[in-house]
Amino acid sequence: MSQPPPPLRVDDVTVRFAGLTALDSVGFTVTPGSVHALIGPNGAGKSTCFNVLSGLCRPANGRVLLGDRDLTRMPPHRIALLGVARTFQNIVTTAGTVGDNLMLGRHALSRAGYTATALRLPGAVREQRGHRARAREIAELTGLGALFDTPVALLSYGDRKRVELARALCLEPRVLLLDEPVAGMNSGERARTVEVVRTVREELGLSVVLVEHDMGLVMRLADEVTVLDFGRRIAAGTPDEVRRDPEVRRAYLGTPATSDTPSPAHQEHIA
Image (tube, rainbow, N blue to C red):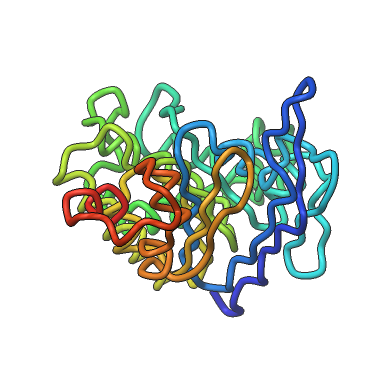
């Protein structure tokens, strides 16, 4: 990527559902090129925040800025075209090969019309070849190169999760939103996915926003962490700062915010 991504700023965002406040004046900034984790107990508002960032949910108050572009009222497809791509907790793949799935991520970047593509006019054919070559490059980058022509139905769970990640990268995002990317994986698959995230961040120069319950992964991978609890931001900082924060210990462990440092066994839950 020739230029670093712009900062992503969440500014005083509030979301309400039928009188329930899911996010309460939440704010944070994703530093360009960083891995920024959103963590918190179940029901903290993490998924709602992701839905706001990707345009699936509109806040009652506040705004989301990508550089100087206000994303707050944009539909999801316009946000995607500005460079924000997302994966989901549940795997969403289609029938066909790995390459077929990755090509879906290139669809929004296509310039040839439906008629030109259907008639296989020379310009459309050249464009499709270029998109497929780029999809293959991204497959190689994410460790899926050898599986490019393999039907997705034959892949392991961990590989199918990486297909979804690679498909999001095929949109050429500047900001990648990863919603629980290692959920349900075994230890080997988790380690492989961590390396993929590190690789794409370094090679493509993009920013990553991560929601994940595996706190060990978060503490190893993230540059910055924002902690939500009952829709409010209760802490923010580096992984080590957040791990030591008494409010975070209270939210995760039920210990009083004024208590002494928890035992090593308790610290494992947030380390």
